[in-house]
Image 1 (cartoon, rainbow, N blue to C red):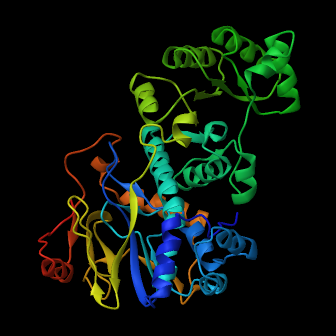
Image 2 (image 1 turned 135 degrees about the horizontal axis):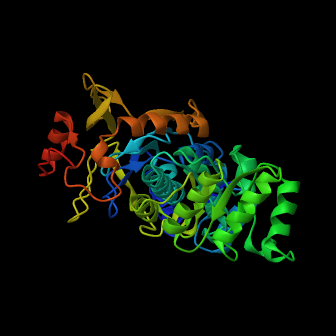
Length: 440
């Protein structure tokens, strides 16, 4: 899906016009980072880097988009012609999708002519903030599920078409086994899952007839058993299996999921059946954690509304700030919003396969014994690295396994992951009167 350069706040274009009029289009570096943790988060997951790369590589205003800007009667023809010819010619570094990061760390670094870099702000934040928020939410659901399979059931309540596709993509990246969303399945090659709605059961003269019909049409299926009476429906499923119908699982979508799932499991065991139990219905990481702590029997979860809207934390406060230009490092000193000056690199130190600390350094600083997390994706406007969904899925698996166990909690912990400033970066900040050694 093409992202139009008109996905931009007006003030980016007006600033660009003023820069243009006064010849301020020298190289500048902007960095995207998240200011602070949302509630109950102890880590964040990078996401959407593939969409950002695609946006930058294909950046261009169409004639129709230039005509729209012309209709505003705000800009000169030479500026509009400048925009019409504009392509992204800069460099981009980023923390790859699927990698874990923390507040204050540069996640995307753009170095380009100032007008280009400025105009990108809205679209970059639009793509990164939502996708990182959802990837982090999905990771928390996976953690709460304790190894049980999770499927994205969210598209009907997601905030728009693009959101539903990005939810499916990013939850799959962090470990979901698939989605109910066929469009996302087609676009990204994600496995798709689905059973039936209560309306299907209600469309037949009896629940048993509905079960028989669906199991005949779709062998090895999952049957929805909470339309009327869960336990009576479970009895019917047992009888159908004994009659030779191939049924793989049952899904319970309402009621006391703890008590019902335990009773259904016991019924299956007594019948000598190894059917799977799939739970759904207003679930998120908190609900799943509570269900399992209370002893619910579940082999898989369908997670929808609260996942796709990230209902407890519906936004991520990522920002995009100027950090360096031809005059040197730049800093914002607003109270509570101080930025780290200078173009930067991010490093991570591991010990025995575990993350132990991150170090934010100046771009050209080398940190012995540490691995760089910011990788170059675009050089001189040309892509030099791919950010794939399969790669992100593998990367998250490795990153999450190296995350200290206490940080995987779905509740806020006191012992934060340490993020330090390098010696060189501390010296730069000291020039601006800011003394700081670590972010958290």
